[in-house]
Structure formats: structure tokens, C-alpha cells
Amino acid sequence: QVQLVESGGGLVQAGGSLRLSCAASGGTFSSYHMGWFRQAPGKEREFVARIGRGDSTYTYYADSVKGRFTISRDNTRNTVYLQMNSLKPEDTAVYYCAADLWAILVTGYGIDYWGKGTLVTVSS
Image 1 (cartoon, rainbow, N blue to C red):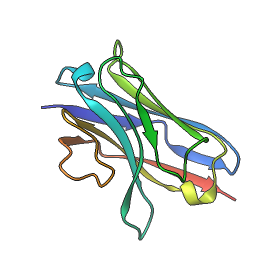
Image 2: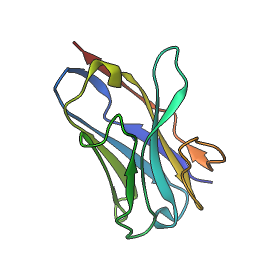
Image 3: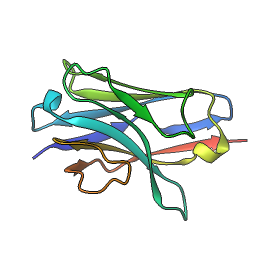
């Protein structure tokens, strides 16, 4: 059983930056594909970014965050990060970390493990 704990959320002004972290425990972290999703108030959960397992350099982003957000992982710390720059009010959401042995689908379907989320609020 893998536990995922997100941190780093908070209140930031538009144009600012935040770095989210997701610490994993209870499994072999490097074996998992990792991803970030978000859910804004009154909206459906949406995919943000994903990164391949192990030492893979594969990353993939939603169009809405491409060029502004960067996903990375540190397998020595069992942690995945989401660096968020040039934040916009529409980035306001609860951000969730996800882990899966096979793949992180953009639909979020079938993902093995989810964190409980961290709130990001971007003021205009």
C-alpha cells in the first residue's frame, strides 16, 4: 500500500510561483509512474502533468499548463514535484498527486493511488 502526501500549497498572487511536493511511502517509488491532477471548485478533476517511472525523462503536460509548470521526481527522496510558475487565477484548485504501476492516464481512470490534495489559491 502506497501513501502519498502532498504539500506546498498556499495563497499566491497572479504571476507568482509555488512548488508542490508529493512524498511517497510504503512502496518502491521508482517503480511508479507519477502524476498531478487538480480540481477547481465546482469543476471536474483534470489532468495536469505526468512523469515516467524510474530514471525516465518522459514528461507530458496539459495544454493549459505547458510552458509554465514542470514536473520532476527525486527517487532518492521518494518525492515528485510540481514547479508552478506564472500562476493564473484559473490555476486555483486542489492539487492531487497520483501513482500507478502501469500508466497515468489523463482521464485519471484506474490509477492505483491518490493523495488527499493540497489547496492552491491564486489571487488576481
